[in-house]
Length: 314
Length: 114
Image (tube, rainbow over all chains, first blue to last red):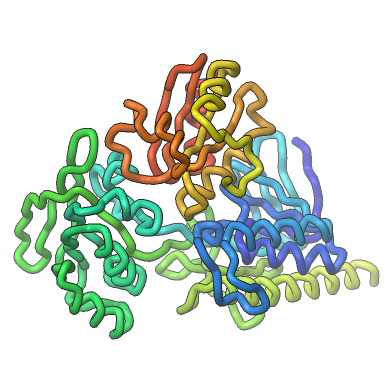
């Protein structure tokens, strides 16, 4: 087993993880950013970012690339891993094993694993992804020109994307599991005024079916329990995000939504472990917030490590 | 041209040459959109690790990208990007829409085992 030690390990390479990497390495702390998947996280999925202060309109991909470059230029080491096999975050010396041959230790850990778009998790969803089931109106809308589609969700994204898709599709059925929308009122009004959009509240998709591509969905009316076959060429799913905290289940304090509770300085309930970004319990999820939280987490971690080293000297 | 660090295929001739001159190839045909970028990024990450596979991209809207857009293996595809895996010039796997690095790795290991 090869063990490598760092002052701080950051788990996650999205905007929060990279911002923490920038601040920590700039403070001359040896820093390892462990990332699974693409560096940049959800940020790279954003086509245009026009409201990041100080940066004129740019793509999420470009912003993420700059953040990565900044972090590595200050000395942070970024390593892409398949996953974490075992970890001990509760001891004073934090330990993360990524394989039988490699483990890392650190005085402090910042958890910034981000989140992922939520999927319905019903039969046929994976099978028809890219063959009628989509999670991006901007990317795939034109494939559904003059076709009938369904949109699933009741938040701002779902309603805004339904309106955007009405430029392509001939008819849209908007399905939502609750009896009211969670979106802002202006978005609800826009949907209601759109003649192409038909709203069905308290309805859910039970399964997707088709052959080469999607042919229809089974829709359940939650009020009556009735299930119907609904012919459709496409289904766009916009039902929010889930925090990437599965690897922490059972071994780290999480709330009932799988989020990490933190205080104002991004301390978790475990000493020496901090958290930032879309994985923490909060109302709003924005890149600017993830970066701000990561800054606080990095400064808290730096102070923690500094105090720890001072104590050892005395 | 796509803003990636991958080799760019810019014509049907270049596509033909690329897949016939290299035993194992992966071409991602897309745009600079949210579903495509993660696939390019994963390919850039994997390029160093899979030296026996050649990676490239092609603009979906390029007129000569019909070699991928209209390929029989892409029939029924309705999600960007269209990603094709070729062995000795023949399609061995094709996917539509976003794929994670882990999913791409699984395909590379299955189709292009060393």
